Image (cartoon, rainbow, N blue to C red; front, side, top):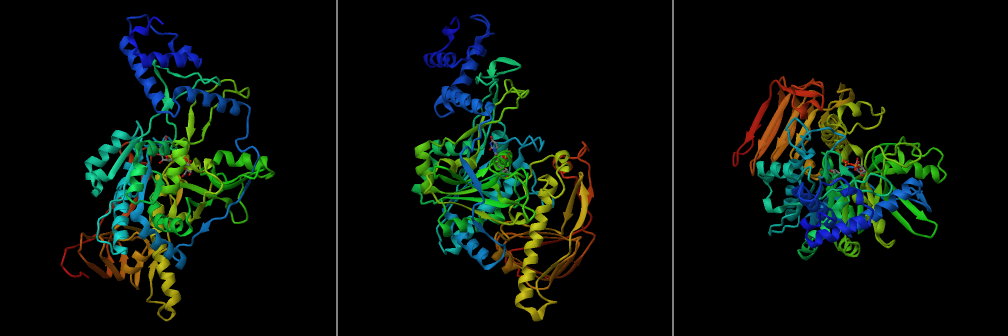
Length: 611
Ligand code: UGB
């Protein structure tokens, strides 16, 4: 009370609320009036922010926390009364007629979409010191994740208008959710790279705030151990994206501008855009309000499982069950083996890759009802089985994929399963942890993320080969593309396949049809091949590559490539992640590309073709 003189009326009200909610300890060690007054003002400024950023304010946060902590202590099953089963969804096979049809439908519809990247996570598991979106997705071109995402959206934007022969210009909104940990570096990365070719006002940054940490089961707010005038805070999770979009007013603006879809995705999946056109096509064709992208999942893999939950009272929902909850849920409902692989070698529950496509109209309706609040959870690390004290402070969290939990059962919630090689290769784990991943499960490291891009591109080209082989059986030896088999190598303790390092910019190809139009028969790539395709009008026919070939064909320049190219090429030399002399983005993948020799072709506009 003796400190009240330094507070304004709102702050006095807030102080009273905190005291009412059993938070007296926050003030227990405060200095006398007149001492540390500036620090005390800062404390209340922080309290005001925490109060304003949570639907219902700090009182609601503390009360919700008490309920969830009590449930956690009692070991209450969050799925009480629900029986899990394997849902049915759309399963796509890359390259078949159905896939191509969905891709075309998706590209057409892309001009009515907004893209939302959640990039507020620090990536503690990855242990990379910079923001994750600044990490190269592959080191052949050094393109970072953010650049790849932006370039892909720009190409979709152009392709969508072209396909509909519309001449007006559309700008697909590109939103990035940042946090205090990532906001400034994300902005700097954009600014120092001229927004990677996107108009600056097309990129919208929304920043999530952290929430207060809690010291015990009574939800007593934790103070920073080094500063008694500061509350300890931690991220609330990617679920914040819904309330932020709602409060930003963006959703209504998009609806008024005629948009129909919002696509959400994560920060480090270099394959993502290979799956987006077809999955958007599924949303359009099937009329899904919610479409989650999924891949076959290995049991115990650290990705959630898409599950149908049926309650004894008749309620049903198709929802992601997080990886740490799936096993106990299955065991509690009569599946003695819990989260186990089936006969196919995979879990019967498709793996959630946290890429969601929501239809804007129903999304706005739902958020108007909930104000974007997403069901929360708490995950305290208890000191012992009495569950009375924590090893370290905890906080409430929420996940963006829990959005369907509050939807009525009439909502059309579906999912689309694609091959992992095509759709999912995130970079989440540091080399040490990746090396400990059980054999057969994915590493999800910088090493595996890069190798997955080469593999996907090679498998896409091989698919051309298979198609031609089938349809032009008499030209078997001339047809399609021959890609050498991969070599198996160990980098940073992880056994990976190295395929020929074939990369292309989104403007060369985003869909399978794009690739089909630009690669003709008779091409072959040796295991030592590296190829970079940078430009929309590069055509390959009868190319035989054993070495490195870099082709730039900017704007309208056309390049036709054929014949044999052989040189010393670029070689992958092993590197150790503990080697501090190497840049971190290199050492975490366990190899350096040594550029010995290459052929570079730079096409000029109106220069015709070059062989
Ligand atoms: N993120 C934020 O923007 N804000 C936050 O507060 C936290 C994260 P993680 P996670 O695909 O493998 C998810 O940490 O949460 C961003 C799914 O829940 O990489 O452990 C962050 O920047 C899980 O079901 O993943 O697990 C990143 O872009 C499964 O799909 C994204 O949120 C798993 O991802 C994900 O954060 C997976």
